[in-house]
Image 1: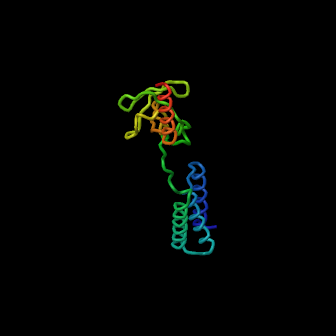
Image 2 (image 1 turned 135 degrees about the vertical axis):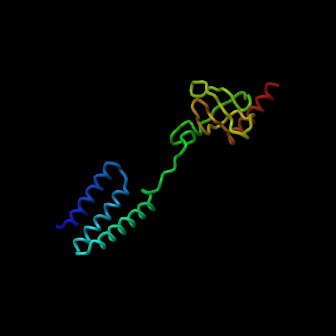
Image 3 (image 1 turned 90 degrees about the vertical axis):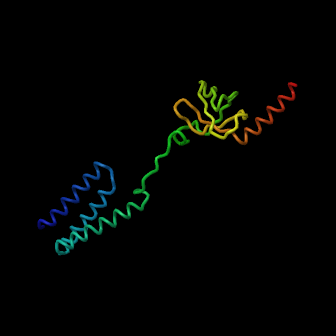
Length: 161
């Protein structure tokens, strides 16, 4: 094995170890390019063709990885609105009175600050939690149960009268 073959093997080995340390698949794709270079060397290709083969295989491998699901960047999801992160999102809270789109209400055994989503009505009694920001619940009127609660409240009002 000549000096070119040793170069390709050492380069591929270093890239594989670096990939194991960093966890990125891109270094592994470049290591595939180095393996293509050693294959071209073993087939007797001159150094310039070895370099071209290594570069083309590495480039194609990186492009394929980039287009696969492993190469796509994951969108950062805001944890305050992600129901997979915060199990309170989608739950219902009852709010008795509002003051300029803000209120305090009991939820899960504690008193929370409540903020109303802009444009939502303050006359519903049940609200759905849309986001949690620190100790503040951001809520919107619950549509299906909100109408039923309003009708129930109207019936209660006529019984008392």
